[in-house]
Image (cartoon, rainbow, N blue to C red; front, side, top):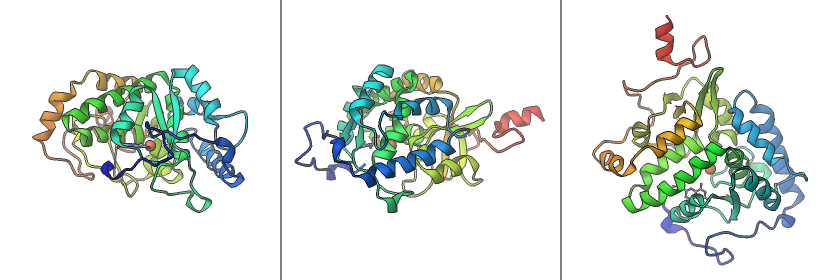
Length: 290
Ligand code: HBI
Ligand code: FE
């Protein structure tokens, strides 16, 4: 991320936070939230992982419209000790990692306009809060996010942020998880997008590959379109364990010696999930059963 360009606005605090100023949202802004929320809440059962759907309850506030962070933070604090802070937009990597390491998630305070319901470039409050907060209410995922923040602080020292950012991208933003009933989505970039919530599971074109940390950190990603490759974890416990048990220092050194993998590439060592008789049974399993 080219965050040398980022300038802290004069109205932001030293940690880049700003007041949410909930009372100043307009009726149109609240209506945009309600519309997006209703559309996603209706389509996600059977697509999103159960932990996300459970976490969504945290966002059902006592008043309609954009969640008031005061109320939201009381609930989140009780669930997992996380807090949400309003920020003007993208923040520098070190600021982002420092907040995560202290169990604080930064969220844009602005919301997209009615003309931008389906696409915008910068993360707004709908992406940040609807997409990310439900899983922050899950104890295992909450620990994973904090571990990522601490890993980011160390990666900065190792000059390896671009490699670690791929882990965030392919899990927190665009992750899939397997379940007995088939694949489910959990990445915030997917669950906050109507189109990608369908594409990620139903479209024939993207690759769905079994999670492998080394492989994932070699893989480039796309920021301007739906993903060409998704990585599939077995569970949040597995993801947290894989992250905590890895010594990232030697891994970064090893990755320096290996070429990047383009987004569309499938390696012979990849576990490829395909749409079989059972929804997305592992190809390997399908062969074993045949
Ligand atoms: N800032 N507000 C905001 N939201 C993000 O998701 C974010 C950020 N700054 C940096 C960043 N993400 C990523 O570059 C890190 O994961 C590396
Ligand atoms: Fe995000």
